[in-house]
Length: 394
Picture 1 (cartoon, rainbow, N blue to C red):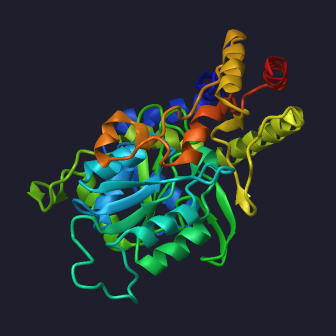
Picture 2 (cartoon, rainbow, N blue to C red; picture 1 turned 180 degrees about the vertical axis):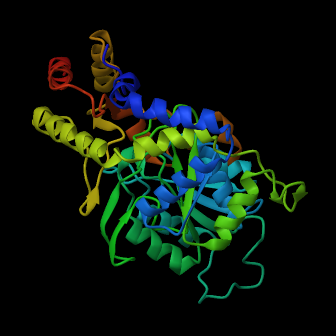
């Protein structure tokens, strides 16, 4: 069996360091928000070039608390991709806001800036600061306040265009970088230099779920920002609304990163660039081996440094995709579909009133894309076997 990601192999390579780090936490008995959490926050802040990093319990809470700390309230509209994992839109609804789904770029699978513009131009309650509202135009229950671009599969969305749009319409930008720790924008026109995933918008959110490129041995997440007010509010929201113990200034959450996870992640942070480079090398091998087979290998936009959290191929139609997936699985290769049902067609979001056909690119991608194994420990022989099996299945 070749899994989609092999956590056992990775653990074996750093076992001594992880064991020592966990033992230190056990000896200290600082299990929640201990010193290792603070050190990990400092490490991520330095790595991403941000002033503040706030550790939370998981990636979903990272998005939820970033929205709340940024001032998003009930019934505010938040634009995000229709083609991503549930957690992005789930976090929007949990803070009382309304997800406004958007179609994707068919090459990168990231949110389409042109589609964002169309939504904003057609939405009666949205205006630029330079364009005052007409009487009755802006309503408090549905004004679009933010956009959450998702850096899907490990490649950053078109942040130059997204930031430009956000400035025009006075929108908050919260990056969902759950799959893209270490990905880069080279250079970012808006910043004048290269930028790490999560560091371009008002806040950036990470998941350290075990299967991520930088993964804990349980749940963990983080928000990065340059905004001290957002950082201060995040620290209050994550800890039951406390500024001082037993003095609750807001209705908070229990979303604290446990110290053991932070210690493990500090060990792994030292290796993330090396591991991401190995993923790129494997992706390059796949690109070469699968060339000319009539399938689409991952498109990397100009100036992006992809981290290949997932290596996703695209087949000509759903039938071919299912045939290839079945054949790979029969040979013991864990190939999977991410994500078979776009968010606008999920039952839980039916109240939003979307229907099939509203986001055609997201719908086509859901039926034609397939992820194959990619992780730093994947051997040359396994890579050959995977590529050969795909060739045979076509």
